[in-house]
Length: 150
Length: 150
DNA sequence: ATTGAAAAGACTGCCAC
DNA sequence: GTGGCAGTCTTTTCAAT
Image (cartoon, rainbow over all chains, first blue to last red; front, side):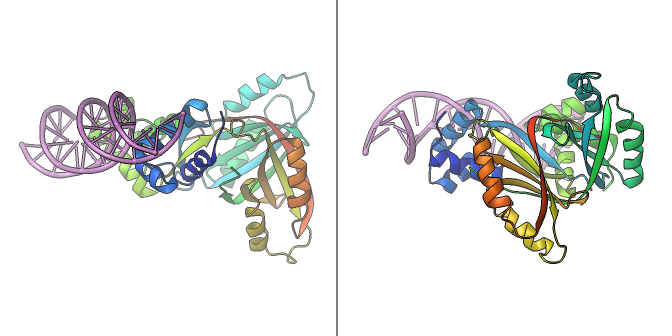
């Protein structure tokens, strides 16, 4: 589908605040409520808008530590990528699995209650995975989401 | 605030589908519609629920390439972290800036239209940043979000 | 916890441009 | 074709019991 400048303005507005009503969006981009609504429907239908999601605050839920792990698999072919993804995806503390090309094969985002809890996850869960060669960790200090292009 | 098992069940349900109505949530966790509604209000007030967000499909928007960059700063103190964050945050293609502890100082999530476009961003934007020591890139092949603990 | 009322928002013609 | 207006209908919200 072709997106015009009004569609991009709608996407920008929705990125900043996904809880806006059609009439608020209309006001933001200079359209009536039904016109804005129809365009947003088209964006959903086209797949440009893919899903609704809530942000949970990990601190408030008792997860004070977020760690990024870069994983390099040891022997390609001994453990299939599908198997690795399935097993790692079953670890509760793993929030995200990114298959990447470069120095690592996978990047994992892991949360834990504190550093002691993270050590448990790392030793008993991650290091115990079959096919893992090397693991490198980065502890997150802070994170900022940005609007991105468009 | 203290979260009981019902609150956690609500958060799990909402993580899976953020578009649920109070009555659907009530049915999922065994509560009446107003009881579920009141609990969700409390979760918003407590900050455990922090925001509503839409998933945009980068492919559909013309951004076919997502790259993770690990950045190590060159000379600590020559450029302040605040300055680095401000400048890197102003690059439109940068979607996320994570300040981390470990092998790298920052991890960036960058999108571009294609690899040629990414090369432009890397050479003219990222490498031109003041204070950058080394940069390591991982091209994303696929990504999976998981429910996480709770 | 259930009911139900008030309000807000979602959706649908139809008309003008 | 796209947008606006006016109206209907659903859902949410929240008070009363």
